[in-house]
Image (cartoon, rainbow, N blue to C red; front, side):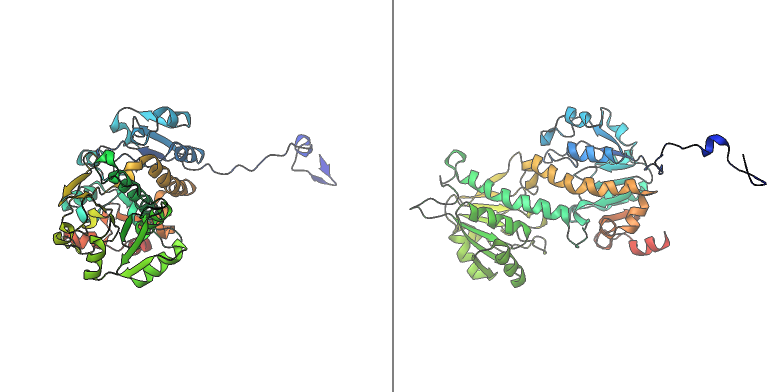
Amino acid sequence: MEFGNQKSPFNKEQLMPQEETLEIYASKNNFIVGILKETDLNEKRTPLSPFGVELLIEQGFTVLFEQGAGQGANFSDLQYSELGAQIIENKADIFKADILLKISSYTNQEIDLLRKNQLIFSTLNINYLNKEYIQKLIEKKVTAISYELIRDNSGCFPIVKAMSEIAGSASILIAAEILSTNNGGKGEMLGGVVGVKPTEVLVIGAGTAGEYAARTAIGLGASVKIFDSSVSRLRRIQSNLGQKVYTTIIKEKLLANITINSDVVICAFRNKIKNNFILSEDVVKKMKPNSVIIEIGIDNGGVFETSKLTTHQKPTFVKHNVVHYCVPNIPSKVARTATYSISNILAQLVAEFAETANIDSVIKNNQGVRNGVYIFKGILTNEIIGNNLNLPSKNIELLMAAF
């Protein structure tokens, strides 16, 4: 076809009306995510609920799910497979994934299966880390992210906050169980009814766990007193609770007197000095018979001199006729709720990796995720861990600047 003396660059078919076509964008990276079954008997949670897995699959991920990994939280393999996960029997096959998700720390056998440049998520209890564990991860040249260190856009630690909310609320429900006659308690209903003196609940610590413990106790009708070392935290909890409650700064004699007269003591106070208690054994001796102590933060150092670590299999012990509950992982007692809570945060976070050319880009561009990194490609980036274990570390911001 010609236009004047010029020949058209198009043929007749090209000039005919065409069906509208949509622009095709480059497909997202098909990262493989592996979810490992927990081996710790005290850990019943799993990182992603079935709906969290569904979200990742919709984003283009392939999800490998170890057989039985959701059992502790009462999720069946069928629930995951129906939403697109591949159920894997052989644990070693999960380690083909680009991103590995687990709740508890990786075992030595699992670390041996890790591959170079994998991204791994897990909890990381700095107080119980040993040098050999970190060195093994460094040797594998992986990038490791701790749930406890991840921040959100507001600067908060979303997974820590979510688990603290659960631990605080659950601690009151646990205390109610222990107080019941069937569990060998004094036979009191936590809270109160008309004409009966309400249960005296003391909450030590005005952080998130303390707030949710107080909120739950108040909701049940208990009389609540709150102690903390910070006036600002006490003001905040008073405001958040939306009603007047007894609050005061921690003073040794006053705290001891209130403890002696309490039916339930919830310890939600982060004891920064390891092996340094706030309340002595003499105070426990003077407490009401069959009263209850619950140490939410026992893994960070107990509040009571008499406290010691317990497990979900044997959660309590009695000392001086006072019941002590000192399980370090209370959210695992309500594993299904805790899994949903973690999954709501983690699925959205992992989904970000689908939008980038590589995993490192998310770490570089997301300050909150970067805050959770303690090993980057085999380089220790957490100064606290380095100082505690006498290992060299590098600032991740400097590493990112060179990336």
